[in-house]
Image (cartoon, rainbow over all chains, first blue to last red; front, top):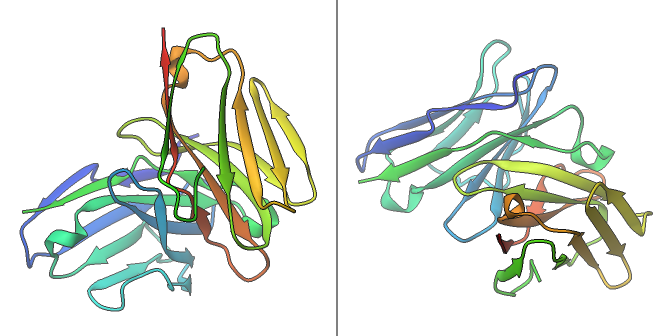
Length: 116
Length: 112
């Protein structure tokens, strides 16, 4: 029973390029969350998705960032025209239900994005 | 303590000792969760305590929750070198918000 799978584990991009981060949730999980972690800090919520729907994107920057969770395939976090400040670890989590229904979130090992 | 404006805490203990770390939060919550993160890895869910619970145990872990003080503590008994990690608390707020709000974490080093 595979856990949450994220790829790539490490991604290096030059300023102005696009970064695509992928996340496959645990089997049977239909709720996906993306978080960003800066060094020595906790995780900051970015976006919450269910299949084909963005439920809450209040933590996502208004420009350059987008996320999707298509009917088939993994969830994608896309960052266009990356800047140095985008360098961080990006974590995906999935859950069977919603957090307030007392379902824990299960995390992947993250994608470490470095911008040159 | 985590959250608010506090700096992350670092704790260094000998193997076999107990480790206690604290977490505070600001809003009403539905539940509070503790996670562990080893260096370079994702977060591993440890334990969830609901807002109507005061104490919960899981193996060597003991979590308390005081909603009147908006605080929680995590106790790891008989620590092992493998417990070396960062520990984060996260709160799930009430209806309508599915995000987890994380603290800055407590770094625990267990010396063999």
